[in-house]
Amino acid sequence: MSFAETLDTITTWVLANLAIVIGGVVAVVVLSIVCVMTRQRKLTESERLAAAANNSASSSVLLTPSVDEKALQWDPPEHSYADRRGAVRREGTVVRVKVAAPVFRNGLGEAFVLDRSTGGLRLAVATPLEPGVIVQVRAANAPETIGFVGVLVRSCRKSGEFYEVGCEFEKTPPWNVLLLFG
Image 1 (spheres, rainbow, N blue to C red):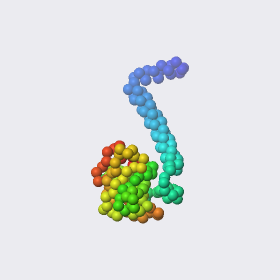
Image 2: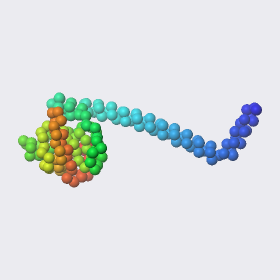
Image 3: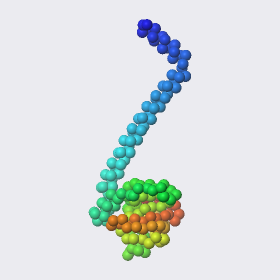
Image 4: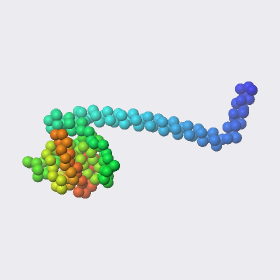
């Protein structure tokens, strides 16, 4: 069988089974695109994590260096099946916030947002806050036009030099305010 006869046979088969051939070509193209997008996503995620590590390492905070390092390198506990949280907890870069509470001498203190959700925040604070108390929280880098957000302290436990404070929003703030917490 010569090359011309083989080519003629293949052409005849392709024309007779055109739907199968087109489906196969489409499947190969789609799989190729999915593979490329998955690879780009993995690269983008690793670049994002590297950038976050560089950003958090270079951020300046008014606390002492040892306290700052511990806040930025804080490792959250594993999530348990008993987690009753109604909103998904989102971790991210550590964000410095101002906290207005009677516990602080001049009324204002500093804290770090460790993780956040649409339901509340988890903060690292140098001073313990009593569960059941309502405090006001505002991102340190927020514009002056953004006010404080009321949160109810749900839990407070010692974690090293800090107190981890679980807070629930009194009323879920608007999206632009939520984004200021990281």
